[in-house]
Length: 443
Image 1 (cartoon, rainbow, N blue to C red):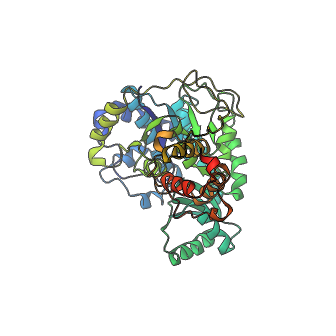
Image 2 (tube, one colour):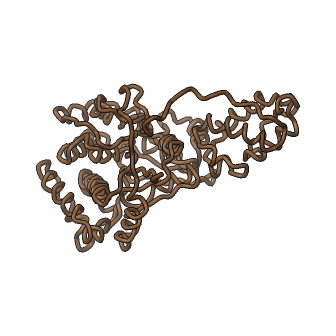
Image 3 (tube, rainbow, N blue to C red):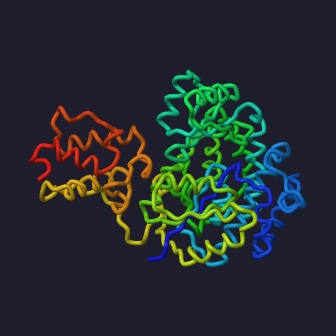
């Protein structure tokens, strides 16, 4: 069966000096795409992005932050579109396109929903809609899971701080006023947690920016959408976009709703996607994907400007036989993620009773329970796989699952202490069940 590959379109921050300079020597799509973007951007008063990317000394990202916001954003948008075009022209057929925040614009352009001209207008409209909020907010990445970061926000008593993105098992992004972000940084340092401010001048994915949604929709009035020829999965709306969706409104809502990237990666992984290609600079998204699910193959072809051509050849060689065959989406409200034709979405069957009390039978039953709850394929739920470190099962979800284990196996009341740190793999849970379960429950 051909490898299923997802293209990941990064958001703001996915910029690296010199990106695409080597790739454009081997792939005409780079020059063609950037030349077209330069021409279209000029109509909106944006300087040529090619001069930035391919100048004698490409500026660093902190220098780009001092220039018009549209310039940096157009560079990130252009890099993703050009990379997608050259890979598709070389025979790579992605199973799904996934945009992260700002990256949803590039993903939808590459899907065919919008033209390149529309995409340039969308980028400019987004920057203009957010202009009023520049300098009034900030975002920061915290090296902890969503639950712990939620407790941190609560302990700080900062009602204006919110979780803006859940990118990985231990990477959560907070959003809010600048002073609140600074206080959160001091608290994180005291707890010895990784903390870094993002290169963003505002608090994206924050409910206070609701006015920007209205402004964005107004600025994009008249842009038409077309049928998509690649499936697009939104980590913000938690589903596949459908042709019947009002995509301009949904893109506007992306400004204030949180990004749940880990959920989307797990959803794709459960459907057999094993290859993940970052279409922009660096490797922020592929790294998060690696930490979210085990056993996947990731590609970040624009990570090293000196090795772009080699890295792109690797993607083409490894993923060139990828294929997708999604059925038409059902309704805008419940459009499913792409699946093979003939896949059935039936309620999960009941967990079968194992025939004996041996460890393998208990493990099989646990795999069914955890697989249904997490939407993971059973083959990755090995006895030794670490539930949090390798499979990304956070403590809150693990607690809920252990309660279900106790009920399923009729554990004696005295053995129901949910020792999450000790019961950190299915093997450890199976041993605990065999030692404490009612004999009838494991026969």
